[in-house]
Image (cartoon, rainbow, N blue to C red; front, side, top):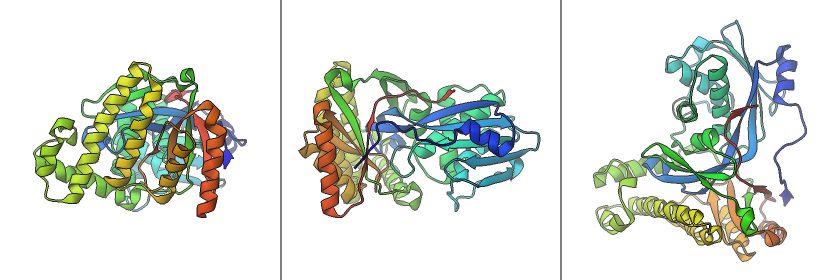
Length: 391
């Protein structure tokens, strides 16, 4: 297994890329992070509770307005590519989920809202691995929204940045995601998880420092790339919307854990029953996790993480063999809890581990993947980091 304790890698910075591409200095450099979701998966589009935190993998963007009414985009991860679009011609193309859409979509969302956004030159350097379930797209959308709005003199708070970034993902790129990823990328604080009540639209920062209990959070990237634009994510969301209509509630969040048996009996479809059971029990797990964190009992959250994975695997059906193997291997190596994180169908697992067991767990997961014939995963130790900011 490749171990990367930090995400920074050698290469040209966003500011250097900007100077090389556009032959001038940027007006500002901004960054936004990827995220790990501690618990609360596939609930944000049902008004649910989620508990993500930002990580030190960041998308950095150097930006400056131009006088040409063109949006020009280049990326350190795609050398030699320069995308140029007249700002008035930026429109959604839901058949094209290529990388420039995440930046162009942010510009489009701001303009659609009536903000005075004209031409921009943008140079991106993202260290958030794509397809790993760590919200690489949200990081790009949030940093673009922050940079373009600030340099255009448009004052936005962090939750507004997140909403425009989500609109870019939903209505420009075509992924019907909920608001969790963009809100975590924009509004997280170092040293805390973000309790986001998506029904109320409210956030609260809950201190989270596993190191005080001699624990670490390990992210295991299975290197199975997932795409939320391939339809499976949308089908899960449509199932939740259908179940809510049948049950006569606006959100599945409106169903409490004590009401779950009655709700399940009101559904004729076994598939819908499984989807509802996951969402309702996952909300309850988030509430219990928050209670334990507030009581400074971080070790006790482990079984909740593992129960979340079982629910995602069996009731929501968004896991895959690589994710299941990573969870099982981490638990056998002494992890207090482990679960898939992100949209699923690949991506990453998080495991809460005693620090002294970290090396052995990495070796065990590596061997399990080798024995199964899977590609070697990548392990990263993460801790809560700061959200979107100007550098």
